[in-house]
Length: 269
Image 1 (tube, rainbow, N blue to C red):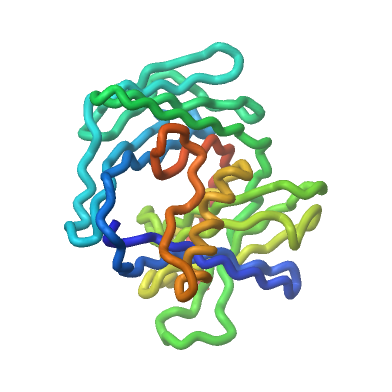
Image 2: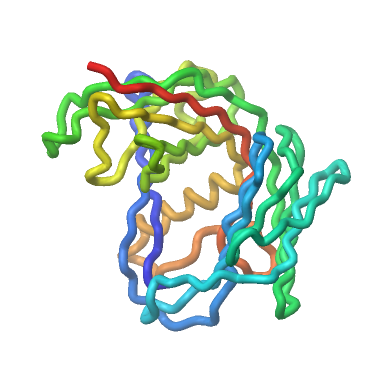
């Protein structure tokens, strides 16, 4: 692909503060390769609809216009016998109409494309660890005079290693371009305050509405995003590679069953 999205994970353990990963877009020269199916699939503990996006990878020397994959058979099923074929609501976008995600259930995504190729992936939805609140804190130091406020996710990690989290940040209902992902290796069982990274020029200011969605994800999806961090760390030593994917059949991307809570705050002085 012409552009590779990379998560760079940084852990800071002072006063239980952990800075999580940021998403960067860099250009990497790669050899041409056979186009592959790219999947972005999610099932949450909400009523839905739950969405699966299908597209096709492109070579480095092509534009960043990833063609949608249409007219595929897309089915999500759980481990107690529920199953639903998703409807293609727009080109390459497939959605459920009745499936509700439940923590503790394991979900399977099955895809069959018009060229008869088949792909599957599974994901278990973790128990819900709720986001307690969102704090807004003033930065002690910043290189940008406009970038003085940060959102902080406040929650209590349960004891026992193995919890993995992804945080999605919205500023005035617009999703931040940064991706924040971490696990509980450094704060297991503790009350936790997690400062969230934003992309350049995504400022938080007085009067803004800031929302944070805290997603509990399984280890396979944590590994998917964490592998992107390995890509950037090894960029000078090894050839670019794709992040770990749980799909059979050779598809790229991810399928994630997650439980989530969302909190919103209005920024005041």
